[in-house]
Amino acid sequence: MSNEPRTKGERTRARILDSATELFSCSGFNGVSLREIAAHAGLTHAGLLHHFPGKEPLLLEVLSRRDRADAAGLFPRIIEPDAAEPPRAERLRRLVAVIARNSETPGLVSLYAKLSAEASAPEHPAHSYFVERYRRLRAEIGALLEELFAAAEPPVKAEPGPAAVQLLALMDGLQTQWLLEPGVVPMEALVRDFLGRYGLHTDEVPEG
Image (cartoon, rainbow, N blue to C red; front, side, top):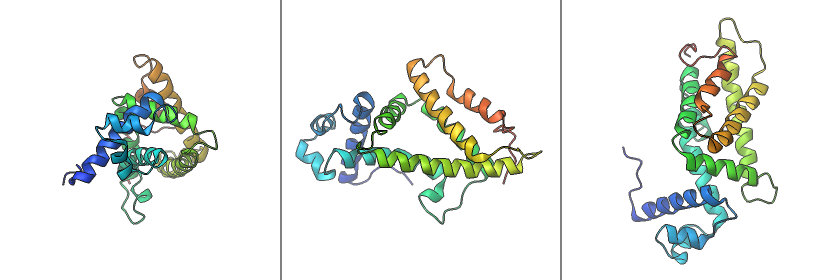
């Protein structure tokens, strides 16, 4: 079944989100207005407000849309508590695949880099969103690494929590460097190297 928006309203919302993603990626949250997003999407200001009551709700939906797509494949229980999770080896492979995909979407990488930095200010509208996002990612990646460390032969004697924090920091830091010099920073290869230091190789991880 196609995931494409089917109704006119859904198509319009998707167009608004696409435009907001592009403009937020270029200028950050504070550097673009709702009127500019509306014009980019081919709508009037009032037409945009019919779908999103303000810039803050629009920003949060832009962020949530991407995160929902990633979570569906990596950590489906974030979206649906009763969902069946893929085997741990497949989740690790999908995590690395997200990094590979990011190499093909510089606009979205730029969006997250800009907004996560802006959102460090407590008054920023996405501050709570990013705080919760990182808490969730630390917990989910930490739980995955705990499973992988225990299943390794021999078991990895490392704390999964700190390793998850380090992995997230590596991924975010690599994205910033990659945005500056795409041809110099091989994000996927460097993340694979980090995982390999814990004995985790995506083509050798035990299934389960």
